Length: 444
Image 1 (cartoon, rainbow, N blue to C red):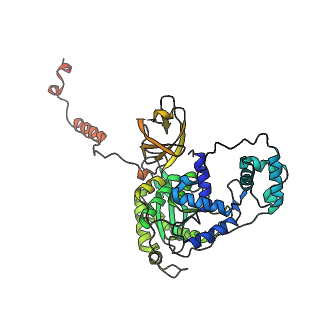
Image 2: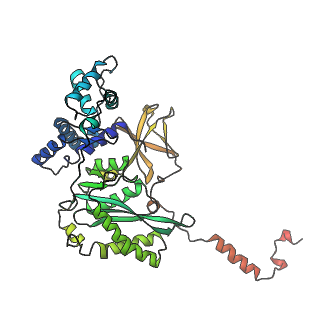
Image 3: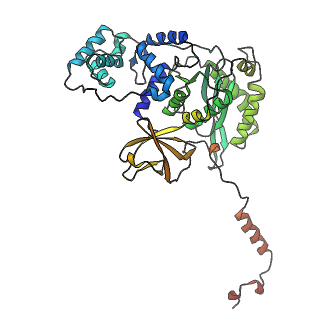
């Protein structure tokens, strides 16, 4: 799934400010968090480190609260000069790194832009510093930071995970497929917010569980997920950014705070899956119905051994969380893809063809869509929305990653043609063939 480069920058910025951008924070609380974030060294996906000034953080937070995710996208500057012809800037960057080894490449680039009006890409600057032996990680050393072990109140943090289950007969393929349980648990109360068994471990299955949980129980303040493919992707990043959820990924080989989740999975294996394997389950529908009944009557209703309270009651003791309006919820769970508009003002997506505004011919546009309904496509260019795409040829109505249970199924007619043929054959086999029953042309 291709993302708009400007939106990728916005998602990275939101990941840095999400903790301090919560709308319910008071000014004093937000100020303390911003000071803490400005003093912190942030780890980038490529392993580089970044320090962001307080003024920059305040500007990002203000832009996000006013305009949402679009406010965090970088502004296109027409007055930025090229770095060519300014080799002395790399020497100045080296002096800035030697002066303060904790300065990140991004921060040094901002200093050079403010001082000289010349923008140098973060990657280019990092490579130049590395060639001069000024690698930040080697100069400063690694600093490990671990989050708090347990949330203080309900809906402060949800933990997501996937449990691999038994093989279940599958109606659309020969044989069976292994079931996988996507689940979300409230960290404070140990309340299972929502869980669903599916046959495909992909991005949309995780989003489907998250959306159902939000509709039922409101928005969490943060979401703690592992680094597996269903949870570490641009789609879930965008969902959390649009809804104002702080997304946290556990560190590889050091999953601090996930011990509670492992204990929960062990309970599910020993007290639910063991019985499933004993009696046998005929379908995924049956598996989900039994799991929902077991969760409501036992898992969320028993006294938890660590908290000493019933998970459901402990979860309900907190303040209710807000549920976003339908428009915002739909936008948060849409996907996007970049496409180039042809000379005939058409674009293609997953084998489908769409007609777009003629002024977009030859331009690259962003298509935003609901994976469960490919008939409606919103068209954007440079964050400006144009007329929706008009379906020209539709071969796929849903994205291949959409769980089978969520796909629309045609209404059954109840007609078994082969059974009718078989019954007619048996009737004819029991009766002698008479001459008068033959068609006239076959009597001669």
